[in-house]
Structure formats: C-alpha cells, structure tokens
Image 1 (cartoon, rainbow, N blue to C red):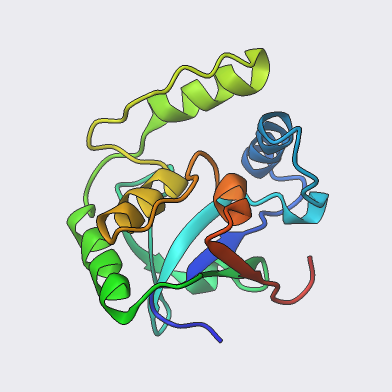
Image 2: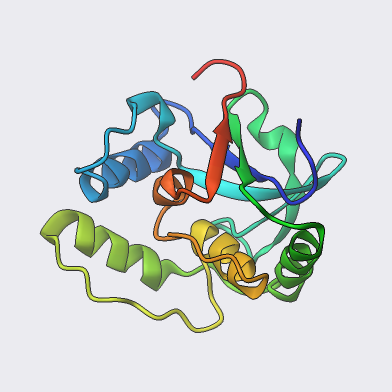
Length: 167
C-alpha cells in the first residue's frame, strides 16, 4: 500500500534515450550487484498523497509533480523502520528543498565514475538529482542510505521494494 513518504522507483521506458543512458550507467556503476535488468531504476520520487509526488527532475527545479506521469512504470520503496516522526521530518525536509536547480555536475561525476571507475566524492551545493534529493531529506530525519543512484538507493538495506505491475 502506498503511503505519503514512500519512495517511487521509476523503471523508465525502453528505447527512451535518456532512460537507456541512465540504465547503462546503472549497469556500469552497479557491476557487482545482481540487479535484474527490469529493475534498473531511472528515477526516484517521494509520494506525497493524492496524485502528488516530490522530485528532482532534470528539466526543472526540485518540487512537486504528478505520479500519473509514471503510471504502470514504478515500484514502491518502503523505508524499513521509519517512525511516524521521522516520516514527518522527511516530508518537511523535502519541502525545504523545493525550488533548487537540478544537479547536472553531479550527473557528470556519475558518468565519469561509470566510464572510468574514478569515484572521487562530489559534494553538491544546493542542487540535487533525484536520488540525492531523497537521500538528503532522509538524512534530515536520521536515516542514512546509499543515494548515489536510484538503483543503489533501491538496493540499500533500509529500503524494501514492493513490485507493482509488470517489470
């Protein structure tokens, strides 16, 4: 069951150049993991209730969007052991992150790591891409996860994936 504060892991469409590039990057970054190809997530957002989500999306500033844009193409991530108070802190932290630009430099560093294996830690400055947007807000609630990519976040032991529909 989907509740406010749950994570929305988007699988992405095949033959979509952006989604395919992200999936290739996920394969290269997560070489050691045995993530099924159908579960290579290309985006992560947070369910707010109704038809609303919070997300950092590439072509706009971080903020709210509509879950309907991902109909049938997502799985639900439940944060294991999150208390009611932590959930409220998490949702409040997301609101504080609204209006910030997308972190294209962070995406560049992920590409460098995927291609070369060089993994110098990049520190973002008031910019986020989808998984770091979610990871930052979770840390504000005292929950530390691997937020490098949507798939590493989904593989984190604090996240339980509920498969929705086809995959």
